Amino acid sequence: MALVLLKVFDDPGAAQVARTTLAAYGIPVFLFEDHNPYPAFPMIPLRLMVTEDDLEIAAGLIEV
Image (tube, rainbow, N blue to C red; front, side):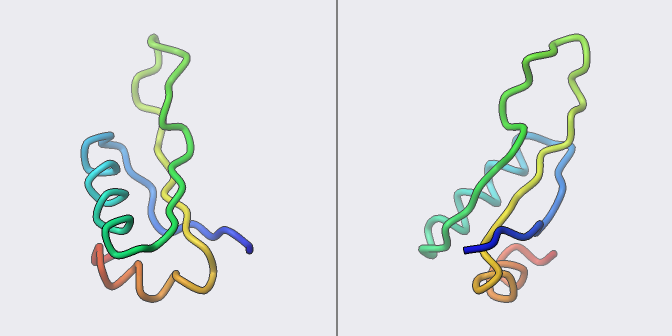
């Protein structure tokens, strides 16, 4: 199971909405950098990753 990048988010709220939407459709989804250990740098991009097999469907669901 190889993970691929679906989308990069600057807004944590939008990233969580996308993550929840995909999970509701049964698509395994992984959000990297979802915990920022550096509060002095609040704009760390969030990477939404899915499996290669789910990439096309996931992209259609969140309109990448």
